[in-house]
Image 1 (cartoon, rainbow, N blue to C red):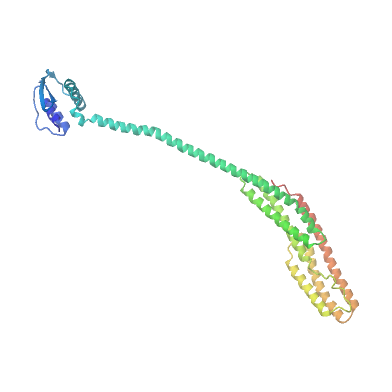
Image 2: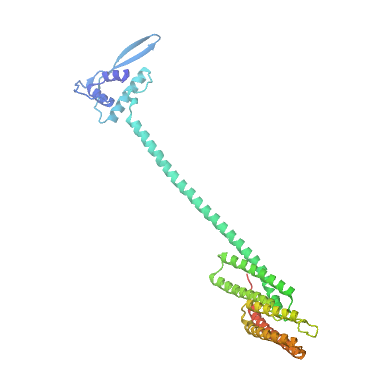
Length: 364
């Protein structure tokens, strides 16, 4: 409590003192009775150089009504001191300015108002930011997906074009594979070409699977077409292998041109090697439906040739050259029979695969 508060309490009426003391945190033990009609004196302190002059001003009698609440009491007190300060020229703050519940409440209301204002603009701004982020992410994902899809489509078109060109070359491979004239050089090139076609077709298949824009029904047709292409590639590759193996079965060349100068031991070794090679190659022949008859005939031809080889050597040791020449002719006829059967099987293969080739659909 400062001096100004003390002077103010002494000057106030009894009922007012009790209320002021209660505001300052003191408890009143007795009731102070005093006339309601009081003369209030105003104390003016003037500081002039080194001394203080106190002047008392009489104030008219005032009938003061008891305030109905703390707020009204404080308001009346502030009005009173405002009048006193105006008369004395003193601009000091009110004695009750140290404790103003109304000001505290106003500050709390202001803080709450600020929170409300923040809530009013923060929430919409945050929602707007999240909305923009979601829309931006969606648009970016859509554009990225569209770009990837377009890239896949362009890649598919390029691969399809190259694969179509390679597939068209399968007709030449079929012609080489079924030609009765055998050339190791042509067969080797045809085999390498088949590997290129197969590699390109596999790449196209993988690209098609990754393309999500293709309708399932259309994808099923594409896969069926690719299955036919792979089947033809495998059959042609098996036929090339078949031809390479057959080319070394029962091959005599000029070995059967036997006369008095022929060495029996050397001829025996050569015929044994032919028999062994023929049996080994026969066991390695791939299974091809169109070549089954020929494959069975090779087995019979090898057994027949092995029997004739023994007779030929026996006749040669007995110097029975007429018998030797007859057996040699039988061996040649046995080989020619196998070759004729092989050519017929090649024709059947050519007819079947030509029909399959014509059913191929263009890749796109």
